[in-house]
Amino acid sequence: MTVRDETEQVELDKSNQRVQRMFGQIAARYDRMNHLLSLNVDHYWRWRTVRKVAPQGTAPILDICSGTGDLAFAYCRKSDAATEIVAADFTREMLQIGEQKKSRRESYERIRFVEADAQHLPFDDDTFQIVSVAFGLRNIADTDKGLQEMMRVCQPGGRVAVLEFSQPTWQPFKGFYGFYMKCILPRIGQILAGNDEQAYNYLPDSVGKFPCGQELADRMQANGLVEVCYYSLTGGIATLYVASKPESESSSLLNE
Image 1: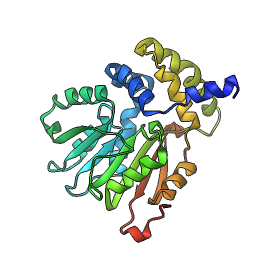
Image 2: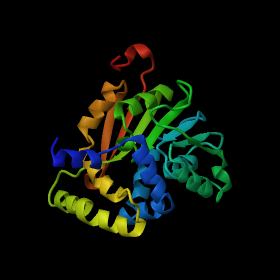
Image 3: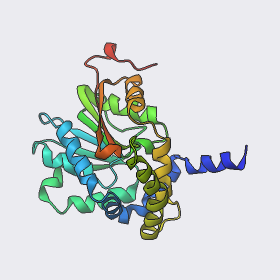
Image 4: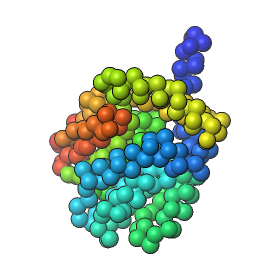
């Protein structure tokens, strides 16, 4: 194995231990950094998500890789007062920040934070009307397993929402965005977050290697989801993928 191969493996290491440690280290600064580095556009992306994949009725909603719970809070504000919102993440430090945010508003009391691995969700089959993930799917060690778990716990006919970073395709924006992600964002993030795991070097690496657009849509369909479509946001910086769980197992395309 060459030195370059070894370096690329380290950069793209998505093991549970690395990701958990990395996000635990930046948990206290995570929200501030996200809003600063996205110029607050991340608020809009979540706003679009909860409207494009809006709650219907009072069945529970699950947000995985929830971090400090921003998308879970957005769903709480959009859903019926009787709807339980579950925010699951395997980084305890992130969940602790989420609990602090939850305590600031009485209406957030119906959000339940759960420490859980997205590859082994501790929920029954066919439970949630919506299963969402925002900027976390690419951090799951086994993407296919994560998608399969999302579909498993979703109700038949329910919806899956994946909000994820992507790569712009049109110039000159593509060039500027690439420069920002590779050169500017890691330096600002390292200065302000100051963590040993270099989370803001990991970000552009993970985005660059993760499938986006039709490629990810095809991946979702291959894992059993149907009616998969996607929407480019803010010039392609982010993409919202929307899919449904088949009404019956016989219509699933999941490869066994």
